[in-house]
Image 1 (cartoon, rainbow, N blue to C red):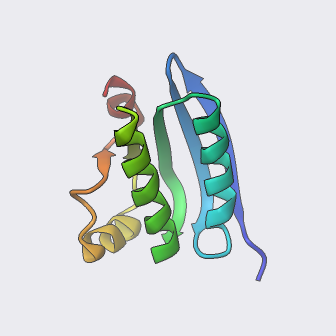
Image 2 (spheres, rainbow, N blue to C red):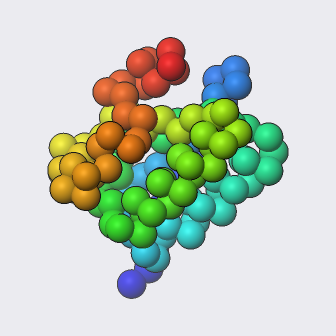
Amino acid sequence: MAQHLDIELEQFDEKVILRVEGRLDAASTPILEKKINALLEEGYSSLAIDFSSVEYLSSAGMRLLLSVTKNLKKKEGDLILFSIDEEVMEIIKMAGFENLFHICSTEKEALQE
């Protein structure tokens, strides 16, 4: 099965928003990981991911988000997830990760953090 994940970047001051569209699963997670690692190498430490077009989040995707969150905290940075679909949020809650991630309801809220 082909991996379907589109990522667009948008910069706001020191924060970069990754607009992710598709499924964040074992096949597509490496695509997001490569993009995030490139941003970290460029020195960005404040990232926000727009989840409004993410239709599925697997354990592989959650592991990546957890790893990035931990790495950014070491650098005094932050990873913010926002506009999470109800079904995807349910997956995060079932895993018990809702308190491990910095989650905002809207893009405006995420940009103010």
